[in-house]
Picture 1 (cartoon, rainbow, N blue to C red):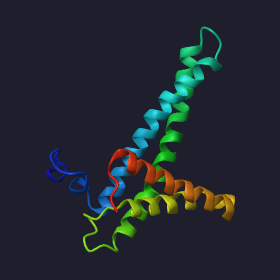
Picture 2 (cartoon, rainbow, N blue to C red; picture 1 turned 30 degrees about the horizontal axis):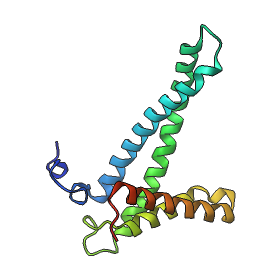
Picture 3 (cartoon, rainbow, N blue to C red; picture 1 turned 180 degrees about the horizontal axis):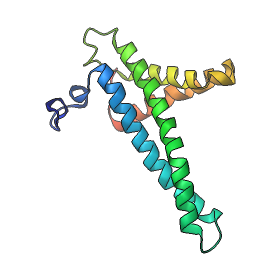
Length: 146
């Protein structure tokens, strides 16, 4: 185990440096998205198959869909943490600096970039929603810092 990630440290002290953080969080997001996507698809697909084939059909559907959802989570994570590393460079201590405003701004950029193909109106609405979601998660989780 890495001494930088010990359990007794605060969240800001446990953060990895920027290039490593992006890779670490993308892998984590892919795992979370794959596991959550598998469970969600399995449960939802149970009703789509006839009696006698429910478990095998739901299992096959979940195996097919889980990597797709995992890669979607990973794409969001790579953009969010790339923006996070870029935005944090404006602070004197980029590794220790973490504010909720910066996180919300990164959520704004990430959601906006991911929805640019749908046009500027949709991208701006999604960007605002992305910023709101990230700020809301910061407040609910108790990590909000200005």
